[in-house]
Length: 414
Image 1: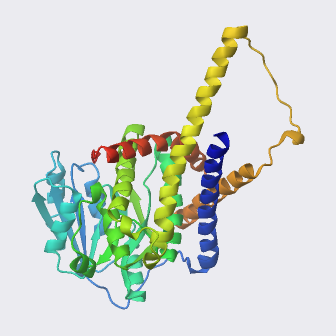
Image 2 (image 1 turned 45 degrees about the vertical axis):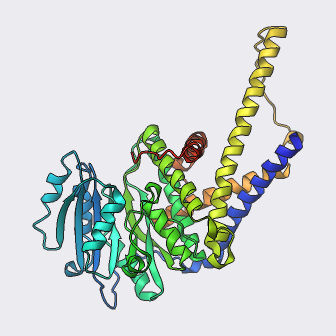
């Protein structure tokens, strides 16, 4: 039995190593295509864009969000902003009404129906050829829109462009760990863009051609992850999604374990259930790397996290059990043992080597993601916060998401 469980462990380690090496090879093949622009960009033409901002109890952040859109380096007569209050119970409506005097801002109020209903409301009222959403807790870099639009100008086949989302002013260890994670996400998103395998078009400022929705239909609930569901639908219909690594969006992230847990529970639950809804694309060559690499890699990651966590718990229980037996047999004995270094005892098994490879490549993804996000190389303590915090917490929201899926229990938005 032990050899069987060890074999499973080795399989997970191998697949995790394979995924990280695959990303790294993709980076090596495409590194010259990764451009970080610092100056102004001029487009041949400036297509009209509608930005919809769903607002639900966002009185503390919505003003900064709207001002960041108004400060975009884009012709004001080509930019329309919809501020939609989705039945807020705080002072959100009073805040957004202050912007009604701007010529390119339209303010709406509707009964609460969820974020996807707000986005569809925006689609129904838009008259432009491009559509974007910006979450009301996020802020855009002044060049974000023009940099994203350059991808559409470069390739008419591009149907959506996702931005680089990073953490806005992290203030504690929980947000610091997320900052390192988001840096890694920037790197991975760019690699998935090269592979044509992006599985999420983030709520913070992904730009779409209008024809995506006229051809494929409006947003769906998508298990409270409508930005994931529309990406799945686009991939199934062979619509090209790009990633603009220098279109920066800064987002407020959960600052407590509880709020982080609720957010990630919703995300993992959404992934599991959207993948079930689109299970017919899995391992189908016609759907490209999205079906052959992205989805299988995430599925393997979920199973490996659960399995490794189970092994850790099992070993801890066995260790505690043996200590209890020892205590009952010989009583409590405290002995201070100072270890000495002897190279003979260093474990050089392949599992150790592969683990070092995995963690080294994960650190590289954070480093290069930071380079793309902040324009600078260098280690940050935030990168080292990531490993213990997410190692302890990720299994919790993973198991809960599986539990909710089995019992058909939908997690709350917040």
